[in-house]
Image 1: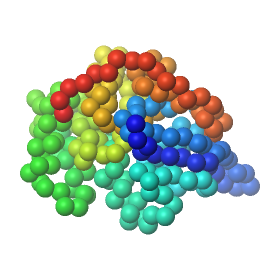
Image 2: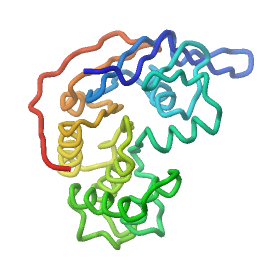
Image 3: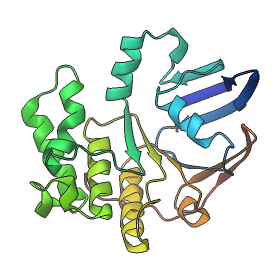
Image 4: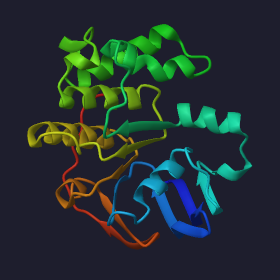
Length: 237
């Protein structure tokens, strides 16, 4: 497998008054194309900070972050914004859908900010993804007309519409009942089986076992990086 992301001695500090809080303390991590990684650890261990830095939403205090060989520290704000929109797909626990916008329009949203997008092909891609996640019958519905599980399916389709290099999922099953959570995990497994790289933050050992690797954080450092044996789910996308 070829390398997609490399973190070298990545650290993040926050200053609060006279105190310096170190959220990450020299993280070394390699993520390969096609990985499905679950990031775990106790509250305050740096999981969210790491996820935000992978998504170009936070800058490290020190260390190096390379995405597809490009050093994040060498990028301008505009270049970071372009990469964030075109190379990174986000799935949030709270879905983050536009409330007065249809399912189709929500899924298409990232394409509105990508340069040179063919509108017809983008729509075709969105329709394929909406069908893949099983909500074609809800295509004209607004988020407030959907269940939590349906909203998360929309979020997954939206994250995939620009064919990102990596999908970042922050507690994607955290607000779902067990049946909806299982549906979402099966979709993520299928997407990963088709070659998508997924990095997922979770507090659940059961959810983490659906990944192919579990990276455990404690006190801002990686304390374990474990392989998980699981069946691969594949299908046409």
